[in-house]
Image (cartoon, rainbow, N blue to C red; front, side, top):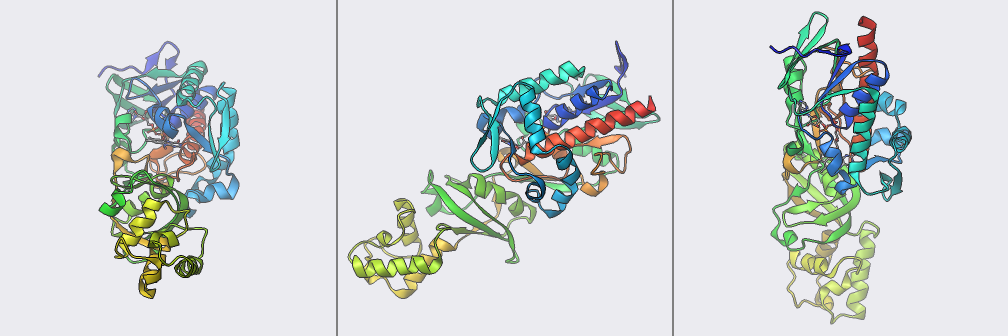
Length: 423
Ligand SMILES: Cc1cc2nc3c(=O)[nH]c(=O)nc-3n(C[C@H](O)[C@H](O)[C@H](O)COP(=O)(O)OP(=O)(O)OC[C@H]3O[C@@H](n4cnc5c(N)ncnc54)[C@H](O)[C@@H]3O)c2cc1C
């Protein structure tokens, strides 16, 4: 084997695998802690996911903070993340990225974006920062395996073998495989004795087999969404923009619930509230009033015009009313069906569009096998895990980068401290 563990400053102390958000942060922090760090990246260009994030504008983080921030990751995962998020909260991440010369701005839904609208600015700044800290990059150098050695680890990669006291694994999950995330890290962690929470796609558009809905493609709705599992229990509720597409539903609301559909293996029901600011009895009263005042008009005129006309017409057809039905001829049962279609529109949902279209992966390395204060594996001391490889995911809104950077920072710091202790 071609041993490449010595550079002109001596052997590496820390090897970081994966040059995404988590890995670049870990490598830079480890180098600033005084460690000699090598960063292996499979691609020629690091940070591909950052580059395409937020529609190419990078929704870096959120304005949410404290317990409210933690809750976004779910109760158990949020509690586990508490230390990482509190030691590097969104305001610290913002300050860090701005200190690297990338101005940020607050936008709707508590999101923080680059002011320039260019995610590439973030990647450039992070790469430069890593280089300035002394990180040695090895690009187009995929890790193939990690072996334990007496004094640390041996990392086998396409370009050779690297020894180090500690390893930080930041290879991401399985979503958007064309960016480099193809599950290599899972193979390495399972080989080192870790379990794996089955990875499923999350933050992906929902595939719905509803031709009537597909015809409404292009509509953007302010809808409430509730998801019922196969046993009828509620899995999640959201109220966020919803986009109708030719394959189902996309946009933040449907994408946020997609991980829950995949996690239970489908058989779910999506319940849409198309008039989330109006009570059910008010919708019915409106129909009753309209039938008295303007009984000769077509049915859809009795529904609130906050709903696009195309949708109102489709709802009329969905409850089985003919095109020429008028408000005055609306029977009570049909009126109630129409109200229910507006407030509790149920559609079966079995899957999302999958990993190819998923912004994140739900599942990964089990959190109880990793120390939440240091990111060190409990099963392979000296191995640190950070970012999406862990069983962590958040909703749309900057929460996934926030978790990746915060866990990356802890992993880098502790990997360097442990490596330096032994040197
Ligand atoms: C289209 C899209 C838009 C998104 N928008 C946002 C957003 O606006 N805000 C937000 O918070 N989140 C967003 N996300 C999610 C966010 O990008 C991820 O959660 C985040 O990038 C995870 O960071 P990571 O470093 O853990 O993993 P990744 O970014 O996946 O980085 C892993 C790195 O490891 C490398 N790698 C993999 N295997 C190997 C190997 N064997 N050897 C060496 N290197 C390897 C990969 O090439 C990659 O560079 C988006 C995701 C996508 C796909």
